[in-house]
Image (cartoon, rainbow, N blue to C red):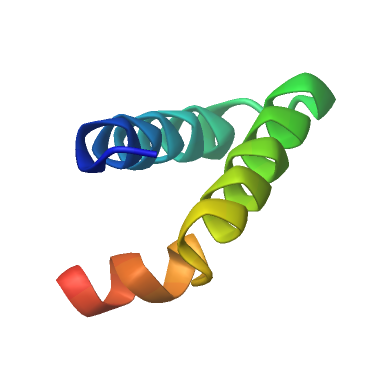
Length: 55
């Protein structure tokens, strides 16, 4: 996976996370978990830990 694809994945994760704060929906939650799994599979790190390092 290219760096640009990983950046898009992180951006999508942040967007869905914001939606999740407003709306509690099972479909949104499943999409969030899918992105977390894909990120971990590609990088070997969790997306939450990487986002904490950035901020």
